[in-house]
Figure 1: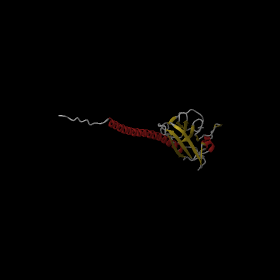
Figure 2: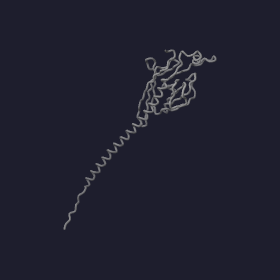
Figure 3: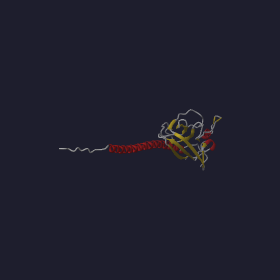
Figure 4: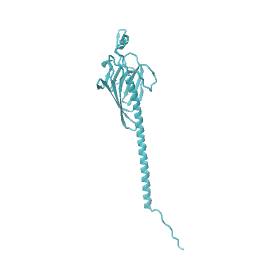
Length: 227
């Protein structure tokens, strides 16, 4: 008796074709997963930077909105202090607001306010002397705040600064004088606070993506001599 042997199976060509199909499917699945993961990382980095920038802008605008300057209706004693006439010594008047985003010292904002930076719990109430400094070498924006005393606030002296945000490519400020925007502001020259301050910040997130953020802070304090 003769038996027929069943020799059915895959040929070498068929196996190669099957392997090619499997590799293609795996590559597409992996590529899709990699692209999704990459996109998620970019989105996460962007959201982290956006959240940080938005938080800092919110704090800055709140402090600027609450900027303070002594009014013309102040008492004679207060006016005398403001003019710096004490015991016959004439000093420079108090500079309640000074801003220049290209200042050589990096101190882009220096003003008096009733609002504190909420992350810093050193002061709960009262007037604060606040300085924002931008260090281009480290791309860091820092803040220094302490209790305000009636003396020249733009006097060079040692201050303690706390970094509030890093990876800043650039920061620009503009100050509203009636209907026009100006690049700098000096209270001692203007004899008034700016009507508003416009802040523009360009940041770079962890993925290298550059993003820009901006805000406008309206100043609500009554300016000296204005009703």
